[in-house]
Length: 119
Length: 308
Image (cartoon, rainbow over all chains, first blue to last red; front, side):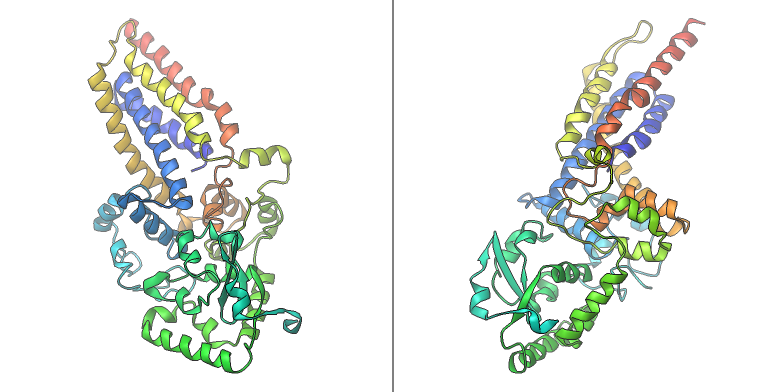
């Protein structure tokens, strides 16, 4: 994520945390959030450019590359698939396509032409 | 055109099987993929295992690693010559075998690659070059200004930007040398810039003010960890609902440019090592303004309201 966004997104979050919580808690929370961002950024870079031995990272690499090279509107999770799974229950089959990411392996339900679903 | 192309024999191609000198054969054409090997999305070992060989069937084998149309476009740019005897006998063999694998992999074989199989190599070459004329950005020129001037319709822009391209070097974004500095950010700059910020903000939570006591280490630590989980949700939401708002964007050059800078460029050049983190350094200068200033105002406000 370009740091211009880190600031644009981070600052309102920071203020929001301060509105919601006592300032010491807000600072600790935002320090953790920014730390999470740093970890994410390095994980994301390494997914693109390194080979991984850790099973989770191996999986995330192939998951993220499917997002890039196969279907950009599937598989938004980068450090974990958790939120894709959660959101599947809330925002499902918006285009009549099976959105559950793990069906990728078995079949591709949408006849894709340009790497994006056509149905 | 094609007759002036160099012709290589299988044996000649087979000599190039090292990481820094790696050739492959696809559809009777020879490609020098040396510059691409280390950026191969599936990992360089997949290419090196088949260096100097014919990878036509492999590239569309679903089990091995089905390739997107972007992959074939990248390959086309690495073309060095034709395979010897790609006239009659060999070509028919090649077509027969590729036809077989299409039917065996049924559905999947149908997507994207169909035209590659059914066209003969000559017309394929021409097609791709015609496509190139239509292609939107010239990767050898600064990208942003081109995008700004070109006024692409949204549909065309969105289609193009989601087809991954590959360069053996980092693409140039800005014309200005000064701005270009900020578009090239190595991966380690993010922790170098932001870890001190994390430390600073965290230290605030451990410092007691005059009226409010500091957090205990346990409380600060557990809140910090909670923050990491907050990030996880933020990461997902930002990626899905901000970076990929493609459908909701208006059809305008402004939104194309904004989309390109935010996330489009990363889908356009997914393997670029630097270009994604535009303005990294410049933003650091604004840091005080955006993080420290609100903090300062808030503490003033709190101090004031507690006094009264």
